[in-house]
Image (cartoon, rainbow, N blue to C red):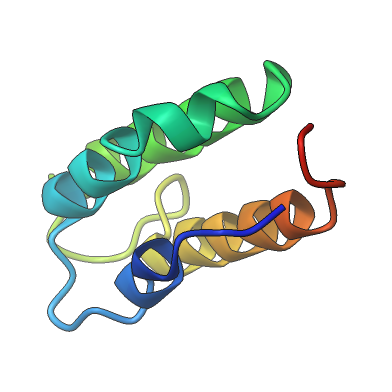
Length: 86
């Protein structure tokens, strides 16, 4: 399945604004609705952790911003492996 370029690009934004990034991803409503239900649910879990972690000024063991961005990248990779129309 084709991933919007803006999503992959958002993973490399500097400085990272977690709330803006989450809004961008959540704003892809039509695209997200075309995915199997478990994909938007998994995405929401990652975005919520990213937003929660944004309140910490440094990396914490619970909320590593880098790890969460990596998780979003893996999520995109898995979406790209879906057959079109899934």
